[in-house]
Image (cartoon, rainbow, N blue to C red; front, side, top):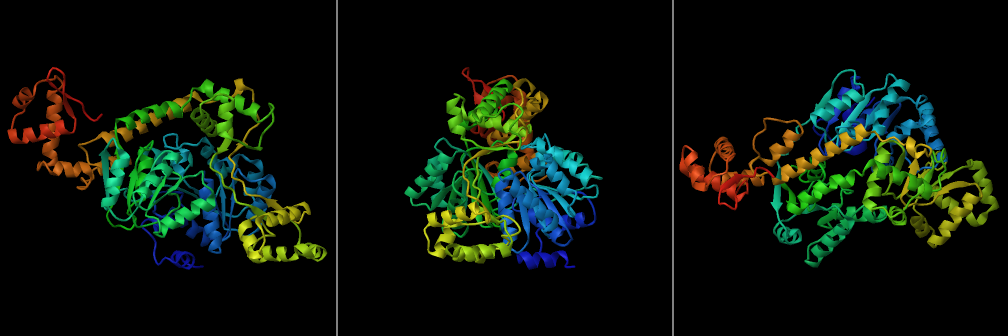
Length: 635
């Protein structure tokens, strides 16, 4: 049996592990349930992939991200490692074939969405599998205190009833101490076992720039700095607008969002990763699974909803260990938008129920029907037809998804795939009888492997090019083979869809846990406030704020963020600044004039004036209309 390092080198070409990878692998190998907290870019997937390859049997990987699921399966298959995936965009026949292969086909990895655990068919087949490890990716989703709680994750514990000896490896890049404890409790760890590295990034400079004209700031800043970067914005339209403006000003840039086809996204990503494009302007759909070490800056034009999301996205800068910057552009409008976002993200429960009823009517689903069915769904058309706000519909669907009623997949680009449903002997007979299709069938067999054991992704345009045919001719050949029952052919689908986990129920029976709803809303508000406090703070080191948020206390000031550099100009120690600042705050419990404040401040008057001036400049204290000073604090 190869050792772990040999497996790493043979399949990935790396000579050594990154920090914490080997420790996690060894922890799992010793039989312990393990929670691995690894920062973005830390190489989480290597931990379970290397371990599973060292053992007999298959690794079950639970992840909510269909795109990441497909990417990892594709990458593993390219390395000669047999991997499968089951997700909500697949037909029941595809799922049956995939499960058969997972049981009998000597595959090493099966990726599934957490909702799959509700399927009796899956549970029956799972009991037949030789499972060497259960990996829970994005493990923070199991905790109601996590920033992306998904109730379907709660069902993961059912695996231990089916496979009592199964080892669990939970992985996440972002978890507070509270969330980490909750993950281990929900997964019934035999004993607490957290392995983590510090979230501190000494090479990464955190900056907040308070600017009204964000585009103007970008144009100035990007001409002064060099290197590759990512600019994050909230809207798809914003990605294109900013990218166009940068190119107009001779700055190499392109845009990226989930609404683009996978072919276009892959091309844009490749151009950026190879340095042909300097800057990518993207929504938060960009970044998962990307390993570009030489990103010199990440700029957020719009504020994310949580410090978890910000830390993860900002952490894509400087993975090579060299100096890099994470910049958040912020103003009072952003503060207002973030507060409003709480209301938009959590529609009232009666509104959610109305949308559920309208949705079922729109899709023509009768009560008691619809379970396990997939429906194409156009969010914009539905919203217009029923006169709902589009954002309210989207967030209502997300809440219904969290409650387990349905799955809404907005960003879908499911490639074409085929599966030969006949034996090789029967295929040969068909080729002899249909000589016009013989060369095309041979081309398919030369181009792809595994066609007789499971569904294989294909590219019709590539086949057309190799066969010197028009694309329409390839489509017609594939349809003819499907009609002749030689293959099952699933054409590419780019349309959003809804998958019903349960049959339609009467509206009065639709339960949305008010406790879960209220708890989630309060947690969301707290996370929004954490972002606002981070952005408006001007006295505490930004790195210290982030580290404290993730449970790391007692860290030193970073000495390089905008707060630290501003404080250094005062030539006053941190201790002295905090002492004077707290004294000012206490005195200004009762507003007073500037002269009265200085009189009440005992000690070195020059130091006092410097701190008061700094507090005024940074709007921690302000003049009222009666010319008295009052404390404004962090907001």
